[in-house]
Image (cartoon, rainbow over all chains, first blue to last red):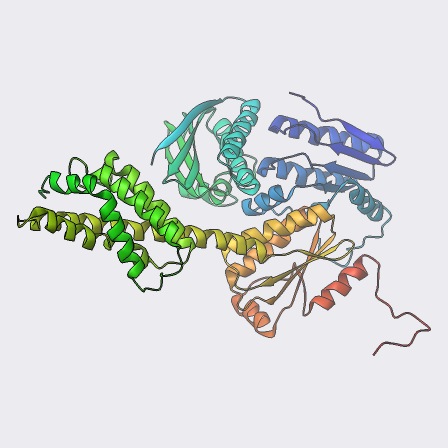
Length: 129
Length: 135
Length: 290
């Protein structure tokens, strides 16, 4: 089992594509690696693709929320993309609506959203967040 | 209620938790659960397996395939540990209550994702949680 | 219960099977019920023959009807098939049961004739009870078949009644019609989210104009759908809010502030367009159509 999820750098953004089944230690390692890399790369945006994940439980959900909050403190925007419908329905049923996390359908619209957020043209600026 | 198939897996490490999820997914697929039903039961199993590992100091899960009549099929999972036990189950079941560093959604969340939920715990002896998901 | 072992009836049926069959069919054809004419003589003859053959085999050696005895398996299978095919042809339960009961008359007549004055009351009584049981069994099988048809139709209706329509590139709508219950909302939720995924929509409009009543449970289901869609990166708008619904929501104390609601589907659509930085405009230099 892989003990690290690779983090790719693209300009001022970091890209994470979760391709393996998450276990708790893997999630914690990703959380640490990401925060360090945000500082090291002076990244402004983080995109996490979870389209392959077949389930997200409260631990992984909390890890996603933590990453979003921590990167916010480090002045980077986090967008989670590609959550499967069954996973989303289950998370809501579980009581985890993850209000602090930005989401998009796929990598492409996720990158668009990050660009908008970085450029300060937040399309949802008038909405609650 | 006849049991059709049964199996047990140990829960001693993070990797074991992943194996429990995979096994539960496989059995749920065999019962032709819908994708959402599969995901719900796998997620519930993941929460409970983690509880067994983190709070119970490890243990095991028993999987059972159930049939009631010809149509109704279900998957029953029993998580058992010989850990410290839960002194106040009612409080442990409260959403948001946590002893560890989680969100406290483990037990309450697993209950919400299951058709039936049953918990027995004795301080100093251990904890047993049984969930059933009917198709 | 002490059923007489009636070698006599078994012998009779074995010996005079063809004659009994002819009498029985003639009698059925003479009946003018609602079922007459809906089944061809050939089909009737075939069903009657199969039943009588299975019946002859089953009673050979005793009349004790035991629902679990393997001796009767064959006959029950025949009865089940018969009930299913008759259910499909819109026969009523009593008509199907009458098919079995109508065997009594030709059977008893022949029994009396052959007995030549001997007492056949006990035979008639036990065979009559037996046929009644079998007739009731067809009713049960018929009902079960009907229930299966109804269940299947309900499932089909669930899927049929929740179409997801594409309004524009990136915008889908789900017009809900009829009462929302837990099971239906689950299906609605799943089909909406799957469709959104498949069409890469950024906006999903749930229109509840056709939903007669909205209670706390329905509102909660709607909120869950909206929350799940948001996790996928899709914004949900709810349209078709009627004055009564607005009142209910406030009275029940349901918090809909996290959800964008619009009075009409058109309003929601135009908001979605606006968010996609699009607009519907009148072409200049052309006269309006109306």
